[in-house]
Image (tube, rainbow, N blue to C red; front, side, top):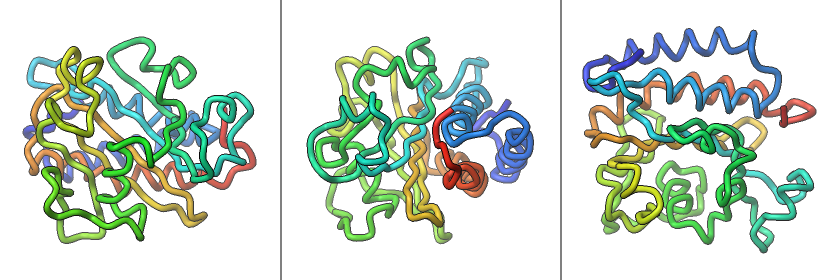
Length: 227
């Protein structure tokens, strides 16, 4: 278990490395790897009282509409742009632990989702997407090659759903990171915290980033992405 308020980046990296090594005996597809990552992140990070720090953790992959299985094509938003597709999910609600039970977020169009649009731009997954430095929410970046997404106060944020999510579930901060695989595909990991996270704590969480994308990238070119 990891206490994000006290853990060092090295301790989190050690945890991520052990999870990465153990996962290869448990997963055989991108979907299984994404679900494994979401579940372990939600389970391992704890608040001071021992409760899960993250109410919800999700793993998305950007996909061309032609790549989608038939059931997702039927519900995909109209348009021609690639869509963010849910592969892994773990949370406090039972319905948040199975991607098939998601009601509105199995397939998300970036152009119609303020949070995905902002996250992709700030993490630099979209190289042609300008970052508005005058916006009230600005990406926090260290001096490394790791770019990450961080919303210090999720409640009343214009890019987070409030009435049915942030307010009733006490979502205080959001942190995430992403990567572009060698295949050219993009991946995004988002974690919704039940406590306010400082920039320092967000940076500790981002210590996961060298390992989670590496695990997912291993399965990105498999014949079947799905479990």
